[in-house]
Length: 343
Image (cartoon, rainbow, N blue to C red):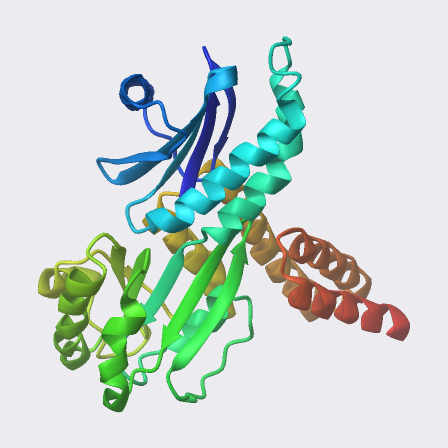
């Protein structure tokens, strides 16, 4: 996942943050390391080093004394980062190479934001959902992907890959088939994951059995951010979170994936795991507002305030379209239109 971008000269000309930013002290430190690197290098090449939990990649434009910097997760492949970093430098120079000596306002550089968004999408994080058969992986995948949930469990051949948009960010969501007959594929599918969500049905038997996946994560995706989603917490035999954490050693979040209202909760869990920035949290506020409006619409319908319900449905539809959930947006617009026709 691309977390931050900088263009520096004598000072920062441009910066974008997709994850929570590094501290000022850390930034000063790696800027200094980059300058020292280019004091020894004269070639037009990309440098890279690992800095705590981040991969810092950079390239210089000697004629203009510019340094272009990407801050990525350690899980990101350097070969892919290099492709996007060369692209970023080329686009920036096409726009500003003749203007860089002028005293440009930082707002002028916003013209490259669409390019940065495309680069972030190309380097989008891989989220892998793992767990044994019947624990609710596909239901959770549908909840993340803004699709209707179902209590019916429907296994398929080896899994599903979906590109998911949350706010302004994109993720690649991998839902693995949990049948033992496909276990020979699990190590290959989990490799390269930025985050691995281990889905459990919260029973003692399943939690103990799921330790297998914890070892697999350590072997195949050692730098991945990992957590357990303790699904089916509404069932009487569900273990509490503290017990599951004690057994597995992984941070655990409670979930009832068959309840659509928990989509907001699930997105908050992802934001917490990825340590996301305020840009994404703004979309979470929209999700919270949507859930509150849905409750208001339900109340209005119960009290036969159909006109009020129609107005609220239109507001919900607008929020859905704003956060990229077109399917649900159209559904709420259709509900509002149907009520208006009846009135």
